[in-house]
Length: 146
Image (cartoon, rainbow, N blue to C red):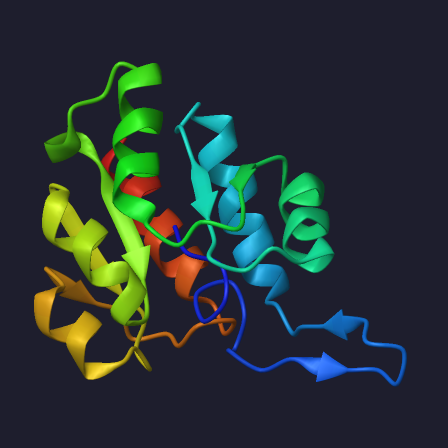
């Protein structure tokens, strides 16, 4: 999964001292908890290197890889380490820097307010926007099939 625009509504609140804050959905947090209960492997791969990304992922107990400009090699490496083929992976993205990963997995998912390039390659476009329950929507679908 991407972080900004998927876990967040793609906005950042910047304080005078340079710290950032983002808006997330508590429903998404519950969705992640439900996926953890069924031992569903998850990773966040983010272009941003920001303490807020790591803080949220730590709270949700999700592996987080930050500061990644080329996400696909990182995703392939993660899949290999977890014994997964790329066609077994679902990737949730929202923008042009997610397209390559989305094109390389078995199921590509775009949030409702995704950039047109990401929505165009998605197998599924969610009804929920980023930071507004998109991850919970995915989690509910996955849990329902397990």
